[in-house]
Length: 73
Image 1 (cartoon, rainbow, N blue to C red):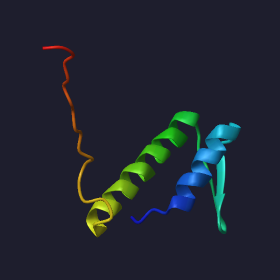
Image 2 (image 1 turned 45 degrees about the vertical axis):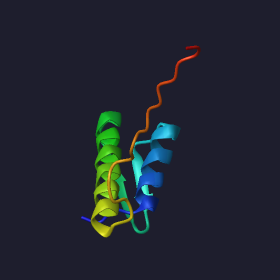
Image 3 (image 1 turned 60 degrees about the horizontal axis):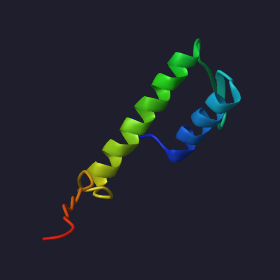
């Protein structure tokens, strides 16, 4: 299923307000618990990152560069 940034924002806003009911367009979803709402947010975040990888917007995990330095001789 394709997720949108608007869906993620709507769910995060509802969570921040302490609401369990989310309206997107003409559909309204009421979650039974806050944990269920948090699971939906995690699923959408995961879906968005998978979509980004599949479309080439985010080709791979970010790289880390570590520098080791010493002072003195």
